[in-house]
Amino acid sequence: MQKFECDVCGYVYDPALGDPDNGVAPGTAFADLPEDWECPTCGVGKDDFSAID
Image 1 (tube, rainbow, N blue to C red):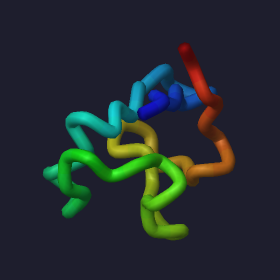
Image 2: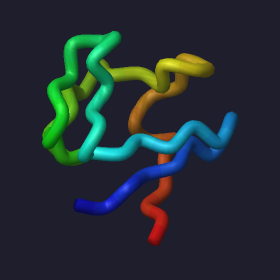
Image 3: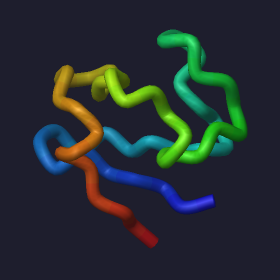
Image 4: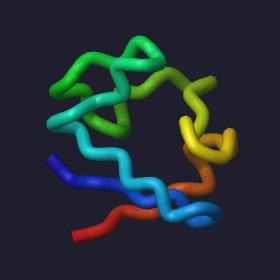
């Protein structure tokens, strides 16, 4: 699964790890994150993330 990086702070969402501190289980693709999910570091929304290799 593809990783996504926050354009604002550089946080990388790794689907293999998920975001367990915010209720997102490992294995959750970025596209499957809730629409109201926010960057756990700076609080911006999914629209401020870009796919990375």
